[in-house]
Image 1 (cartoon, rainbow, N blue to C red):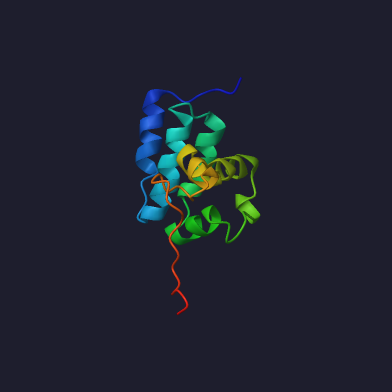
Image 2 (cartoon, helix red, strand yellow):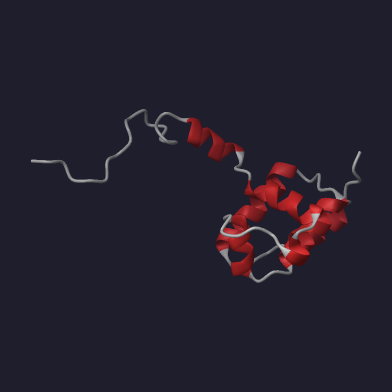
Length: 116
């Protein structure tokens, strides 16, 4: 079984993962929420490498605008990136909903003009 980091290391990692772009913060928070405090040492190392990137480069990776290459093409980085890119439970429920996540039961709103 992979070794988990302790509470103190997890707290430091969470602090280090604070980003300047809200979009990156959302990916990071979703990662930690899905792990529920169970982050392996390998995942922590991969996350540390990703956090060394400038915000825009990290966002490009998270949004699949580009893939890790060169020194980023490491197993730990690729694992963490895959986990961070994976939609959370709320996003999966919204995507599976017949109304695109609208809980009102009404059909989706059309954003084009009706023909006369």
